[in-house]
Length: 451
Image (cartoon, rainbow, N blue to C red; front, side, top):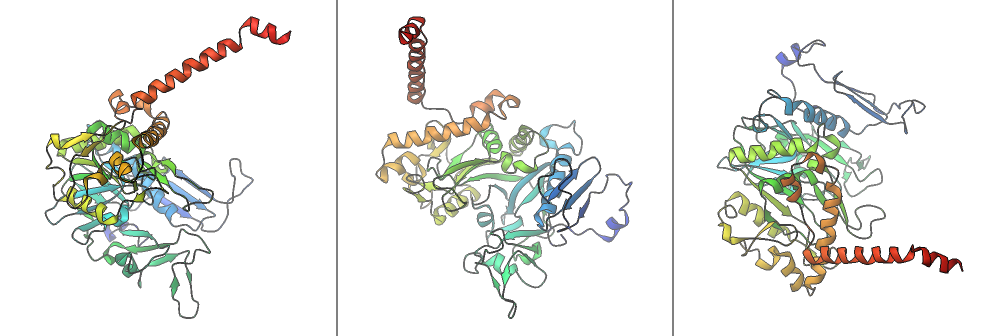
């Protein structure tokens, strides 16, 4: 935890008292010592209990350091939106974010949101920009600061060639977790997953050469990038979001799992996590989305949806968007190329309403940026694309049902809508089904059947 969080100063430690205000948050971690499985509500020997009113967290039967880190983040998700005062407008309060953050040489700040496998860590680690942090931040009325003082990086299949910054950060002072190493020469085998695939390394932020210390900026983000890995090949590699759309897609927190990532998955599966951090939310997702949109509006920031997933078809028929293209699109966000496009250079895509460029961006071809054209270039019909898009739209709508009652109508309508022909076909099917049911349950039909 000394590596992952910010170490307190001597004066801060001197103020640590049980009756202090604000109340200090204390973590009691018993490591592998199990909880009593016979206690009501217990289903295993592991228990992670958090009390906001007591300011305490108790961990039993787990040596996973991430439990402590995420416990602290959950506390921040509750307390920060109430500061400096709960009566202030959304743009003035502190917004906790499950995101990475970096800053350019001109002081422009970017936030990256994304679930596992979307490229959040890879894309935010830019040698031309300073890293503020890779996971947990708070956007205040003055700027952005990192909750943590270190990184908790995944180590599975780690190599210096693929991720040089992380590989070089693993040195004296870093802490490896769940890795297998040679007992004689102490060399770590990062490809060995015999303990778990969730191998980790905790190291202080200063182990990253281009990290900013202290990890904070006094300017507001000019770009918010929502990352997704769409394995269905429906979403465009880059799209511009309206205020309502950024709220909708932030609340949705969509990505997709593909075959081989988890046992039993043979085809793409959509997964949603509200605000890209569902397990850690202490309030309704709309509360956080409202604050995000308000801050973007007040400070003139732009919001983008960046798909690092498949183009030209879904997983198995299309191909994953080349990393070189994705990096160029991120560069186009940072250097203002995309923000500089006039309104007539954007076009809404069917069903989803996302604004897509009409032209190529840097060396990224136009057909790559426009999903239906990418499918056609790969030998697939528009009907096939629209069917896939309609299916994904259904998944979005079904997921959003959980949150719609607390959202404004404009935000609900900002999500994907079924194509008119699909709606007409479904209505026709309902009419036919209704007629069939009527015929089946006519009294004379039942009497004839009985006779």
